[in-house]
Length: 100
Ligand code: FES
Image (cartoon, rainbow, N blue to C red; front, side, top):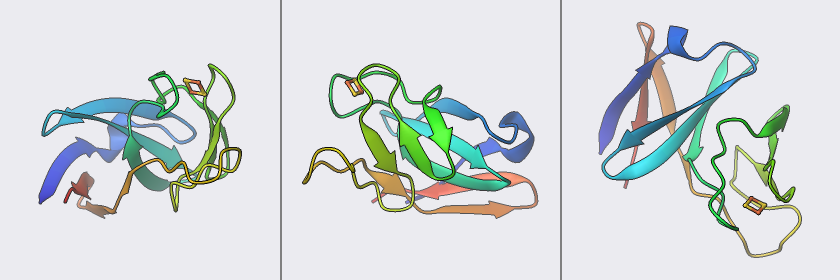
């Protein structure tokens, strides 16, 4: 299912914003002009991820420091833990994500 979730101007470069779609919290990060979508809360203890520390596509949860790759969802600290990530497309300034 493809959903329009935001407009590009809502998410300045280097920042993340939390949205809701289909009863899910979803965070969109703008990494150097490329948008990434993932679960909006940390799979550890549910901290919101819109204000996570960012280094490229590496996202670090502010609460206890779990790190996730926004391209794959893989957690580099805890093998086997994965953050759900969603395909993103941008058309005429609108951001779309695809949920299964
Ligand atoms: S809630 Fe994110 S690392 Fe603990």
